[in-house]
Length: 302
Image 1 (cartoon, rainbow, N blue to C red):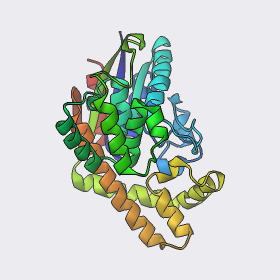
Image 2: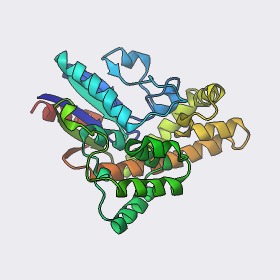
Image 3: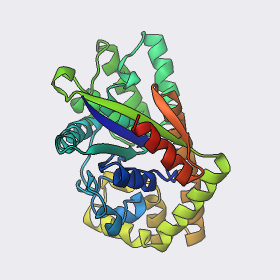
């Protein structure tokens, strides 16, 4: 059975850098598991590794979807399965890296949200999920369960999304909606590492990352994406709404920076909540990247 290493954690935790070093030392290839880094022409705002990094080891599932398109977790599982199988066939180690817990659990086949309890408990669960996750994530969940219901529900309407989820889940048996035919999926053994940072370290890194994004051309990138597709779902990503508000004269640069930092910090907290509840994970302290790297490599070789 082929082995796959998964490295996940909140935004700005150093996932990409650590995954690159792991892939270089263990003859690996990197597979993206970030729901924003899949889009073309959005490398600045989503933190896609630079060209020089992408050329050091093979990288897959980066910048291959048009920003105007919707891309679901179900499609991700299909695409990732194909890529991972090909990497394993070459005798290399697939290294999945990203911060989208929804995609990662769909890939692992451990999505607990597809196992609904009774009606009252289901409503409570849905309300709790709505407090933690954005409407976009809830809409993607709905899309994996019912494309028809998702197509008829606006991704910006959390109330209708929750109603549609409740109706859909109530009618389903306790099956995995992402992989309706699990026996047809490749047999892979996943080892999952979650990166953990102290709150002060993560906050500092987030602030620096956001400032670097704006300094590296995020505003121009947002303008280009809007010019090509004004209603592109990808424009809901962190920093893009703030950059466009700045362009439209609705916010100063300082206000756009501050709001993006606050939104990113809230997003990081949601990510940490998601990863904490994942089972069968190996948590690694990542305040010191070198120590984290040595720990991950040692465990990957076990």
